[in-house]
Length: 222
Image 1 (cartoon, helix red, strand yellow):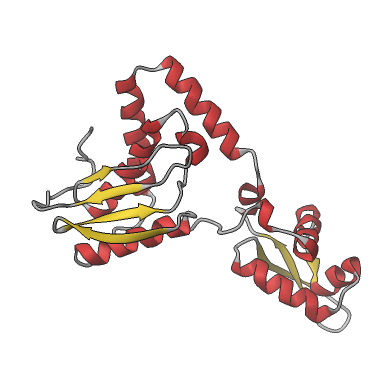
Image 2: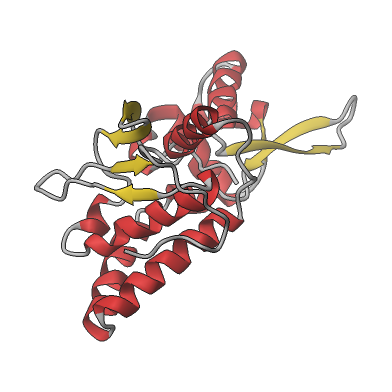
């Protein structure tokens, strides 16, 4: 499952208006152009960009007087990508869980979340360097800016920021969910080495001088 690479703050101008119109009902390019007061070609360019972002898709063809008209609609997962409620909800949920669960229980829950996330992904193929590169690509799809470094015959995926920054503040256990996700996909030992200062940054050590074989469901708990 690929994450949608755009959020509500990234939408402005005509593209925001197109999304708002399509949230109400499907429309043709001609109808959108008329509603926005722009040319047909301009709407098509905006629709192409929104399709690439995973927010809009082609729908059914409506019967017309001469030929069927292609309708456009919001993509199935676009509503979640456009919502600004997920981050504060998750942050407060984790805070409440941390107040009601022991540290061990919360760590176990985060590892379970990581395994669940990994179960939805296809196995990574190739040797370890190839798998690490694919894992870095996965984090990129999720919105992270990362690079891969070699270290002690292993690798480090280092981020310029944090995927879960809002949740990590005060709840470092969250990093173990991503740690377990990577370990399950890469099938080697993964240790998080994240920075948790004012501006959190992701960091994950992979393998090492003595690479530890890893099978799904047997991730080492910290």
